[in-house]
Image 1: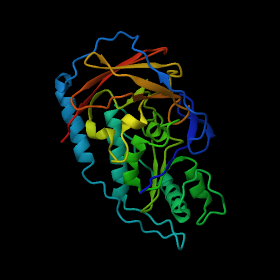
Image 2 (image 1 turned 120 degrees about the vertical axis):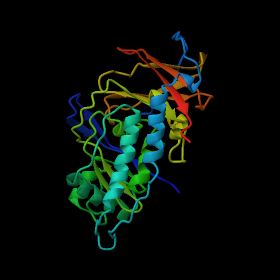
Image 3 (image 1 turned 90 degrees about the vertical axis):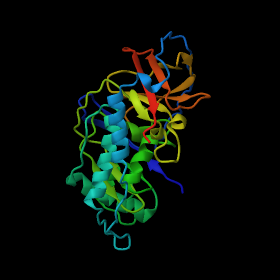
Image 4 (image 1 turned 45 degrees about the vertical axis):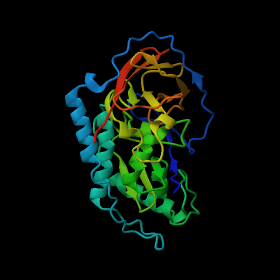
Length: 322
């Protein structure tokens, strides 16, 4: 089964208002891989989970297990034959929000919600993608089941060739979007909220652009600081974040010259860094990929980001949430 994703950019001011849009399915100049040296002399913590806050670990694992217990999509009531957008059960939309808010909780970001005024256009968007069997942020008026409302939502959404609940995990892994990791960055965006959710049984649209959220996080890292379920590195079962990239995004820190050092129990873990295209859920962002190693259970990885105005340091510990 081939799952396709498409993500749109919106250049954001720090106030969260839309300044402009740049379209396309993650097209643009190739990222530049940078070999990261270990010139930053950092003193690492131990590589065992014993140093992690037990209460936080319990909270993270409870959210991981409880919020993912029911990921059913429900039944779509529409039809491409009659160009009826139909709808999905409201509890299916609730499950989408539950998963998004779980991931935002891990990253210490505030929860978000969806609104009916955005759900309707997103539903028309999902119908159009389904009727034409492809993804397009700017669908032509010649498309089957075309509507201006659906087309407008397509230009404001993460879109995927699978139903809405299952799409959330895939957005967080975000394979195939090496120059942006845009789906993940939008879900972790300071400006996210409220969303629109539209879905059929095979395509979905998640409206993320144009939100009024004001999280004001100085930076957001993924995987995030603190305890994190090792299973969260590959939640969809398709690809691991070690292969698509760990990320740091910010609306206030220019990361374009950033260098990254990762250590595990004081041992250097080499990575290479890509500067990501601007405007996909954040002003600036990088990804860094493990070079010859993979994330391991009960290990704490100390991450240091230098070459920026405000250096960043944090620890990620991978835990077993059962």
